[in-house]
Image (cartoon, rainbow, N blue to C red):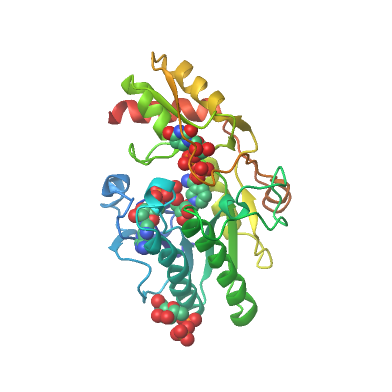
Length: 311
Ligand code: NAD
Ligand code: UDP
Ligand code: UDP
């Protein structure tokens, strides 16, 4: 059955892929974005679709619309961008969650929160399971994002307990793919753009820190699966690809796949940079019947193809 679906942050990297899939499934999509890190270019191909509607709006302000489902993705995700205006980042997560939950409560919509592996901070439990409470610095340069997202989770669970709003919380681990902004600042886009331009590849620290990278298509499937799941499944549910790589391994893979002559250089490690990260996705497998299909090397090839056309 076709639904009216609100996607906040819909002009961003993940939001635009989500809009694509929701429209392809025959839904009406309302994309709300303030274009802080999102781009018209990501959704240009949707503007002529009568089932698609675009609204420039900042989720820190109230929004009165009538919808059946809400995917709340609005929030800059790259450290470079979320640290640009940290107060606005916390406002986006916290005021944004309050407004979207208030909206969900009024129209009785189901609402999904794009939470993050950052709620685990620099974790001592590896791989990370949903019952781990995390190790987060509350006053560091990443805190506006990490604590903002943690507070958003708190709000989601209190609206569920107090107001019976149907909530869905997914904790997204590092995700990459086409439509990342060339200046996004995250590691996959940085390395690919540097390799394609023949510039130095910038590894922060020694490159021994690890991350697990999920391809955007896989991730969006999991989000839609979560939204359609049993009413009682509130989450949090980890979604991501459990393959774990050091940044040095990633850099070498990007150099090999692009055939680049770029050199690796080492730069200072940013404050509070997590040393290791890998999702335990047992819950997503058992409750959603989901697991990622696309291996890092294949996803990187697609992403390289995208950036080749852009540069
Ligand atoms: P992105 O920066 O490409 O997208 C975020 C979108 O939100 C942008 O279009 C931006 O303009 C919009 N936005 C920001 N503040 C807003 C506001 N106040 N009002 C309205 N719109 C606003 O990042 P992304 O990678 O697509 O991330 C999407 C969501 O997924 C974010 O909530 C992010 O925290 C979460 N997430 C992403 C990853 C990842 O690796 N990509 C990992 C964990 C969580
Ligand atoms: N809100 C909104 N759209 C709606 C309903 C509410 O943006 O359709 C906002 C509203 O501005 C409020 C917030 O969501 O500040 C929380 O709403 P709720 O009803 O939970 O709380 P209250 O209105 O009592 O503050
Ligand atoms: N990183 C890096 N070089 C870059 C950008 C990032 O070595 O040009 C490192 C960064 O220090 C971190 C990892 O790559 O250890 C992932 O960084 P990203 O900003 O993509 O995501 P997050 O730290 O939020 O997981």
